[in-house]
Length: 116
Image (cartoon, rainbow, N blue to C red; front, side, top):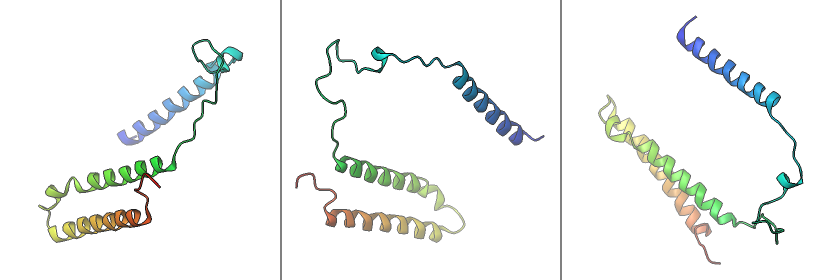
C-alpha cells in the first residue's frame, strides 16, 4: 500500500471514528435555562435576530471576488519566466478584464451605492 492511500484511508477512518464517537457520547439534555437567551438575568426585551441589509452581503461577495483575483495574479511575476510568457500575460489580462467589466456592471446597476 503506498503512502498516499494509507494517509487518505487513515484520515477517513479517523474522522469517521471521531464523528461516530461524538454522536454516541454527546449528552443532550436541554432544559429551559439552556435554551433561553442570556441577557444578564433579565427577560429578553426583543428578538435576538435583527434585520440585516443585503448590501453588506453584496460588498462581502465583491470583496471575496477581488481577493480571489489577487490570489490568482500573485504568482504572475514567477509565471512570466516560463517557456510561454505571452500565454501567461493573456490569461492575466483576461482575468483583469473580466473583473473590471464586472465591477463596471455593479457600479452602473447601483450595487455599490449605500444611500438610496
